Length: 116
Length: 115
Figure (cartoon, rainbow over the protein chains, first blue to last red):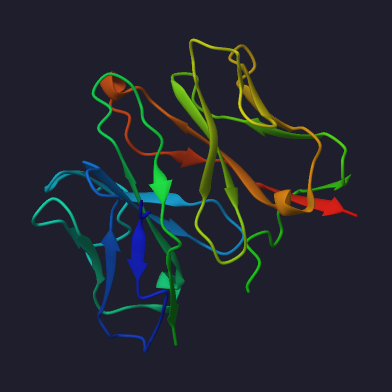
């Protein structure tokens, strides 16, 4: 079956522009996560959805970052008025619901965002 | 492509040898641990997981050991192959009842397999 799909794979934008990054999770996965990965570092949590509900957005670095998952499937991460420090790889992951125990998160290949 | 492993600790092994990658995790309340493999230009790939009620789990050519007393996790790869070259991350999570959903990743280790 298909894994987590992210688009675009690469995005170059000028400082101040808005960008939108898309994530298609594994079919049937209730939980969806966004992470940010700087060069040479591990991924860092941004936000978490269970179905269409955004249950945790504690990792979003500023109010310029906004995520949505309106129908509980595809998710979009939007960054407004981009800054150079937003340059990173943005990873999406999905997992089965883990009501009683954790389930492994499966990652897409990410969107590499470069802000000029 | 761009290297994920810039400035990361590096482990170099000969092809066919066993590899041991270590990780110190931060939260004594963590209940669930995962090892991921990340190749350049790709997302993290799930290798193996272990829950806090276990101290050892084996997969195909891989074994994860958990020592909760010293908050230490290790990944052992048997008969290391060139295709094992990548950056390896450990990650920890709280239990769902404890509010766990987000993974906290370690620093990462670059594994280089020499022919």
